[in-house]
Image (cartoon, rainbow, N blue to C red; front, side):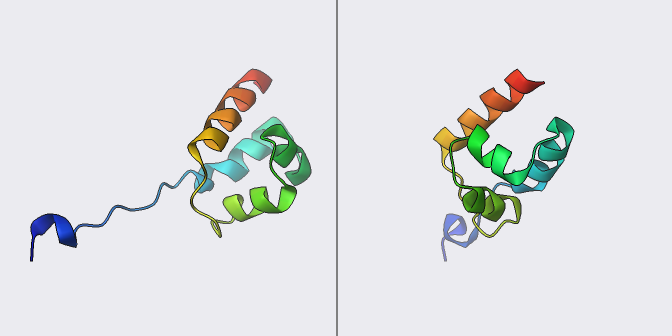
Length: 70
């Protein structure tokens, strides 16, 4: 078997830090969802790693808006 066929890439682990960022900013789930323009439930799924594929656009929005709050 070809070597590149056997390798897998681990999903990004950004969800590990989402809760920490939420706490450090002093925001609730609904506020975090509103911050990046997604429903509260969707944010909760990201935070709990139920959904591990956050779009790049959402991730960029989150980074920019969280940076502005600090």
